[in-house]
Image 1: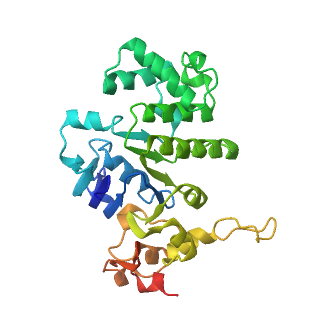
Image 2: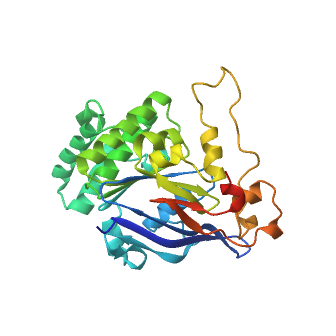
Image 3: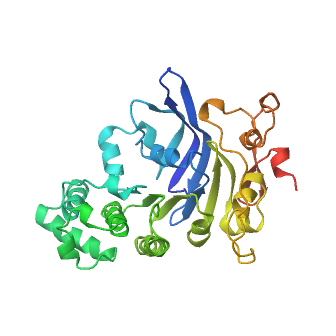
Length: 325
């Protein structure tokens, strides 16, 4: 069966002040099946959000450029779509849950009118019908007293409530694909769990696929079918979730897993950390970029390791230093 979303050799760059094109996403390929939840995990600055924005051509202009690759949504090439087709895709067939709910909502319009706008634009509802459906959507995402809350402005809602409104907007047109970019950022632990439970429940109700972007492997373990591990603009490992947790092969994946809190850790002990930082984009090498972080000289990192399949659906960037047992 054809996947709902297929990304082939996607490369994305940003133009710097001195005119250089700095590649933030480097030859990335993956797919999302129908009804499947795929997670992208990695540290900040590894290209997760840029990859997601590229899928619906939401890169900031004029700085952002898609250099090469294909993005096929239900067999259609998103990168060659005309503007009217893109408008139909965004918010209609693809729902996008942005990272910062306060920035995603317009502070001078009520939350009900912002949901209704999407319904009128994509589903052709009248203003009255769209308002009724907006209230129903607020009820769907478990906002209490939705008929009253629909008349509130974003500043009067808590962070968790604002995130629920953003989810309601993303789901307004019953999309085939939900892209959730760090949907629990800046929320406390209890609200995080509520939001994740809500997303899982809604995905099942809508039979939609989803792409979940996070830096938290615990979130991945609870919600995803497959996981992509990104580092410095590249996918260094991808596998079914259980396989990745049981048999991680890349050194970066192992380091991420080791940094998670565990029950057997001594109380108040320091968690293991990954030494160093992700290199600035200007300093990326062509070879293994995790080796670059570990101090291997750049002159020894001139050849990009290939992705190899080590077991069914388990791919790893085949750097000898990073995949040795």
